[in-house]
Image (cartoon, rainbow, N blue to C red; front, side, top):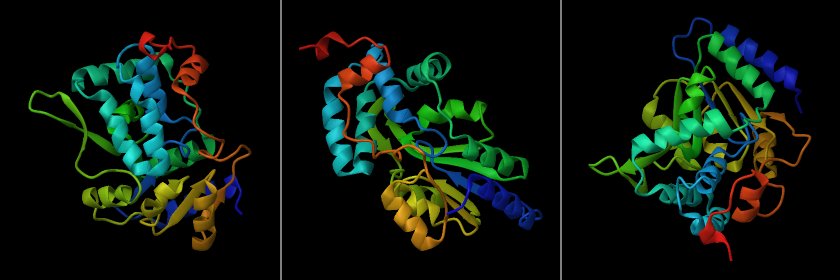
Length: 260
């Protein structure tokens, strides 16, 4: 379909067309679109390996649920953090971003995001990952808002392990965006079928980035821009690795309660 360069050029043309508009919004999925990493999984694995949470026995159940119903899996991941305070979660997430995570950015998408920001767009990152996990991104890229899976907390500011408000995964991405923004949406980028409804909100330029085959079929039908990956698309590389393997690959210790 279209080259990486042509999408940047079409984004430039979109900016010129909308130069006088005061309402310009761009939506970006996170994992598999802005970067190759899976922030929700990677941060949780790090917290398990460093002992910040001790819910590793739930990992296989999480993966089983996610494989059968991805939005339900996104919600289930929040249960790993039940009992943690919001303050502690924020501190741990900042440490993860500053000391452990190596963000594998997809540079052509980052370039378009920066271009849109320079031309007056509000950039929102819309994700099925916990919203709190992506707040540090606001200091690193010209992103105005993280729209994700929000933690519910009780009156003592303790996380309940459940989500609050709209479940921001699958069709819920579009629903949540529309609950927060009633104006026009001119750009959207995503990589998976979970992003389809969000991407259809955009009436200007829509970009399927390293798309999963299911989304690629939708993108071809809709006439969206497509940037294929030189590697297997995100989410198609095979089955889930065990938690022990994930920990070893990251050089993290395996908690004693997981050892057989």
